[in-house]
Image (cartoon, rainbow, N blue to C red; front, side):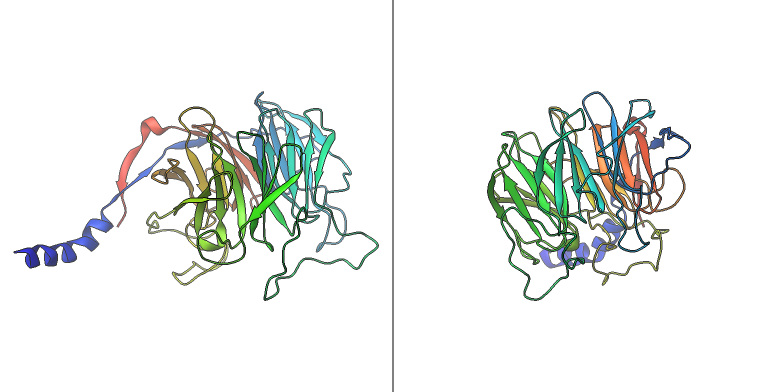
Length: 362
């Protein structure tokens, strides 16, 4: 009898899997939310953040100077809660090279992570520089982008090689994901003094392949979007591994990438299904995690233990579609901002979970 049951389960399991419920969260995209002056345009919108007053900060690859390849492309713009343009922060800043992400801490300080200059800059709410991390290559030297070598170069305390993001724990310690080359997390104390780092290039637990985004929950645990390994790794503030989260949701039948061929099961890298580009954790006592991938180009809503609560959107060029979400701001569970690289925009999304209907994927 036992063997018959096992045999039936083996026969039925593909059917059960094909019919498993995948909740899709209804949502709207607020039309024409950002009011830019006539002579100002978004370039590749790589970062977005919201402060305690509802002001929205966009770090975009605009204000481009130099040749088409290797140009300086970084600009922080501030908007009011109604989307009205207020000001540019850090105009002509020495650190500006190639925008990556922007974050706002609990005191409304503005943090910009510049991948091109290997620098992380802290501005006070007035927009003045108050702390500097990393150092760019000198203009007098022979410059060029960092290259990957085997074996990897050893990391240097206090320096970065293409950093990607920043977050903080409950004690104010600073965590920087570093990044495309070093593949580690660097920890500083609240005064900016070096503490430690953990991680190295690789696929094992605690190793990284392009830690692309980073966020912290109310307990100070650190969530790292390990993009090249198609997972989110969670650590305590001392770097102890806690758990791994996967964005495992069946592909829609009509899934298409924003550009290029449809990725296959063997595809690796940033276009792989479920490879997290961005993570964000909502404030408050009942926190949820949002993550995004480039293909099939969805937003994922998760509990902090990794349970997928719903998905929304797909890759595309229309409103409510996404073109490589590079950073997410989530000031509340149902108000989300997404910065899109290849669509040159930021969308304000309003989620309507009360309208959610469970669908099946075949």
